[in-house]
Amino acid sequence: MDSEYDWMVSDPAVTQARSLSNLPPEDEKGNVEYKLKLVKPTQSRFEHLVTQMKWRIREGKGEAIYEIGVEDNGMLVGLADEDLTESLTTLERMAKRLGATTVEVRRTTVESYNGLNKTACEVLVRRVPDDQQYIDLRLAVLGNVESGKSTLLGVLTQGEKDNGQGRARLNLFRHLHEIESGHTSSVSHEVLGFNSKGEVINYNDSKQGCLTMREICQNASKLITLIDLAGHQKYLKTTIFGLMGCKPDFAMLVVSANNGVAGTTREHLGLAMALQMGIFVVISKIDICPPCVRERTLQQVTRLLSGPGCGKITYPVTSNYAAVTAARRFNSENICPIFMVSNVTGENLDLLKKFLHIIPPACTTGEQTRLMQEITEFHVDEVYSVPHVGKVLGGTLLSGSIQEDSTLLLGPSEEGNFKKVQFQSIHRNRSKCRVVMPGQAATLALGEWEEFPLRKGMVLVREDPTCCMEFEANICVLYHTTSIKKGFQVTVHVGSVCQSAIIEDMINEDSLKVNEQALVKFKFKRQPEFLRVGARLFFREGTTKGMGQITKVYSHNDKGPHIER
Image (cartoon, rainbow, N blue to C red):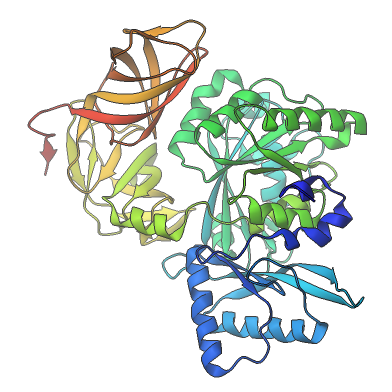
């Protein structure tokens, strides 16, 4: 085959024999290790192998992939049965030394020149980091209204198939009008767990019976937080808030097989691409469509993803082998896996679960370490009033860390002030915890509060809080019917901040049209906000949309914010 990606569109039988042989040479960095064989290593060699495994696991934030029977240049060689068994035993001993577990994810048969078949094997090694209870990934669920997003999440998390009338989605809805209309209008979170053997752990666990979220977290070595977002056009503000504020690692775009690419599908895909998220597609409701309609929808999705603006290499997943390959190459290559599932019959749901089990974290260990060393910054996206507890803040930690005894600054208020606070307790996924790491969502019990009104968009910082009414940003107009000029008013999203702002000035430009870029100065309409240089912003007004990055903030108070002791 001439192209590196020809295997993605070849015959499945050929794919199984070729996909691993096309592996790139081994990279010294990353969480993938090639081993030709691990047969009876000496004690010194074994200690070196254990140290090497520890490094690979650290690079993968708790997960490593071992390719057994593969040379360092990526050539698929394979092993005889006896050598393969011995190599897997050695690998298990190495993992046991580190307190890790191993799961065999696939085997490949290799035909040798003498006619004797050999076997190569891929193994997932998982060890939950010492400072974490489980490996945590966040997945945003996008798609048009009535595409089956909430139903799919209900089936995955409840472990029961849908009845064709939307019964599976009822547990995800937060409001009465959502139940009555069947349309999601808010941001809801559910969890899907996997144990060390790759088995699904959900609310209706087949082995342990009905489980609570706390029990799922206790039994899981990997946890997928599923963020269900609204699909209707009138709830676009909520969807953007979920994407910007909840900081998902990946996005899953759900497309209804009977409706195809319709409504907000393109808009949601554009948002995920603009935010540079890894994305995969699930085509649902295949049980109510004839094969010709399924094929038409698949072709629509393929044209959309491979067209200008996306440039993705589509990869339909039709087997366990393909699911593993898609998960392995999802972060490193520009592919977009496509699953075709039914929530009623359960068809191909096992492939989707396999993919979610193996998909690696998007953030590398180096990035995680860098974020932990930065100043603490926690974005508030929910405020609760809990009886006998008081005010509780929910949100996501962007950088630094938060411990139970941390003293942080909460704000800004409408006047731009901050207040020193301490927390009574910290919870993650309804379980008490002692520390929050970057990228993790948590709720913080504040207790009784009468200082100033709490709201979404506030932050918790450790020091040097600077809030602003004016800021500069480099922006690019994604869509606008005419041109944007000075005085144009938009709604600006920066993390969990959502507020109207006016374009006060355009540096070296008189107007902006679609795909044009410029440095502009914004001014908030209502109150000061905490922003940091380098943060990504999204702005909208009607059909107008644009992206940008903050380059400068103007302090709301030249003397600095007032901090109440």
